[in-house]
Image (cartoon, rainbow, N blue to C red; front, side, top):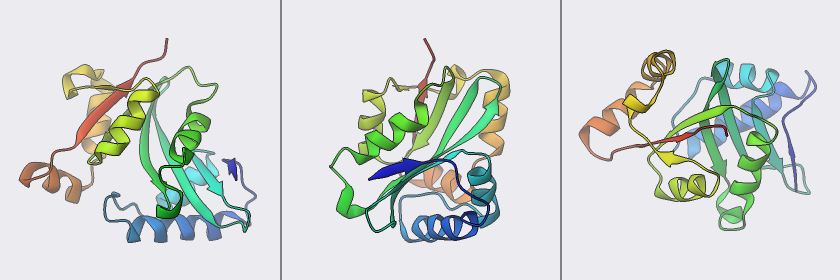
Length: 162
């Protein structure tokens, strides 16, 4: 399997559509518009893992919030490839060479566990710098806010650069 975050212009529509479809099908992922997925791919902010048949089997998206803060927006691995270490490999590639801070919110305990292996720690909103906090709150999906307020609570994670 190989992981890429650089794509030719002609590849972007197909990859974006595949990622969009995977997000729509996966119950635990927050939905994102196709246009924002395309923009993240163009920016090199989507790390995609392909199997030997060139099918997408996992991805991580990150979005720059400030000059030194990124948010992990989506993190997906196809069911067949879960518990194989692929989720960590994709995240490792997304974090590699970056001396940035990262924030992520998830409803999935398994993501929290993997995140901790990569230096993410539990955090509260008060742990975020003001500009990051404002962006984070304003960029939340309404369905995620409703889910958090009415039942299952999300976990906020932060990873600070050394």
